[in-house]
Length: 374
Image 1 (cartoon, helix red, strand yellow):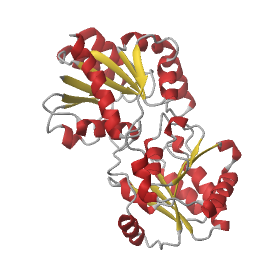
Image 2 (cartoon, one colour; image 1 turned 120 degrees about the vertical axis):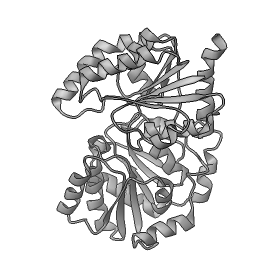
Image 3 (cartoon, one colour; image 1 turned 60 degrees about the vertical axis):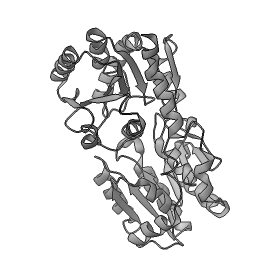
């Protein structure tokens, strides 16, 4: 079976990581996987080109006309796919849908990963909203199978107007990787000079406005007053990193905040953390929240993160309107009460929707529907 994966990015975001996890578990003798990416870089490109192709076209927001023409040309040439699996955060761009439908006989799977478009600035938001209103009905018509990574992501992308096949499939994680490891915890903390008595507030995510890093800094400025032996670790990279660093210095917290950068072994840092925090303005699901729970972390997320991520009884959804000081108060109180055997957390998620093995089986069944219908 020949499958084309459309629109994954260059860095380790939630979409890229779930696609990569599924890719690693698909049988190479049954599934041939190619990628069509928007831009010059593809996450884990060096791995994907060993068994398939990575095709590139210009990003639409940089070169809209070239993007349109090159996506069209691609599907005019590459007509032999059985499945076109399109990952999207909004229906503002449906060029791949349009031309896959026009030039191929592939089944089009639309996989929704967001609950609103991730755009910055009034002009970009206005353009995106206009395109969404124009394109949503067309996207529904082009889609053969709909997937949402959460109930909210499914509803946002497909709504009540979609009458075709589809379902919600939670992004599962590798529970053999994301499990608490004390020796790894000790090694990471020693690397940064953090002793065992210090409480580490951790965050993993891209430095983009929607992740709301400055809210974490604000919360920390209150928490450190009542819990002096506390620090923050930011794992990830992105356009807002320098701005957040400046904000940390403005609050005179630079000696207690670590900027780790983008890394491949995030599981080690969850083990090093004591608390996980994700005050996002919105999320399609939030893979990192699931990973944090698998490693037994007391987790604090905004209630703009879908409740589908709740896998344990030690995750708290709080309202951003309550403010950073209130979040600090709740975290401080819970630090006194928190008792859990972190070694057991990962196993509690096995054979549930949060297990990557379950996700892979769901995706394979959807791929194989087309084969059964032929």
